Image 1 (tube, helix red, strand yellow):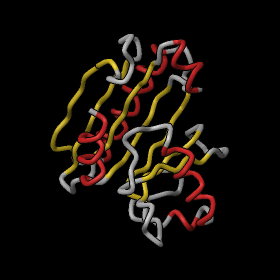
Image 2 (cartoon, one colour):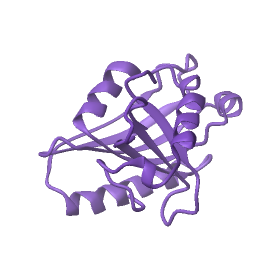
Image 3 (tube, rainbow, N blue to C red):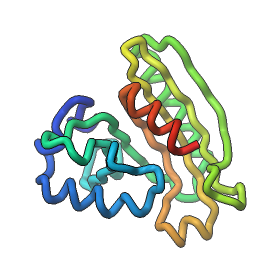
Amino acid sequence: MEGFSIGDSLLDHMSKKDILSEIEINKSAYNYLSDEFGEVYLYKNYQKYDYLSFFVRPKDKNFIIYYIGGTITYDDKIKQCLTKQKEVYKEISSQFNIIRKEEDSFPFPWDSSGKSINHYISLFLKSGVEIGISCSEFEKNIKIKNNYRDGLTVEISTREVSKWLRNHIN
């Protein structure tokens, strides 16, 4: 994705200081982040995505990438996002041998208003890699408070990170 792969070192694209700084900044924003995995964001002029995010182990001296997510913002344009989600699904399903597909929409558990919704498709590959394609739409006040933006996220993660996220987010 945009020149990054699972198993690469994030040090090939950022300094150790910048990686550790990003991990520390994001730790307080997301209650599921821990010493096991930290999240790093990169905002550059990518071909397809507005920004990328990565999960790495904070104590790994090589900062190996276990998760890559690319996001395209669609503020207040959920129908466009859902159309793009279907296009991305068709593209990915023609390129990979998918052994299982899950699809659902649900409110984010951390939003007590129930108005922040995640529409997702999860694709499971034989290798253990999971590909997620989701459209997130956030309640207006949550967007303002947290500087969140509605958007499409395509994510590729190892089985290890997918399991860890499920145990920490739900």
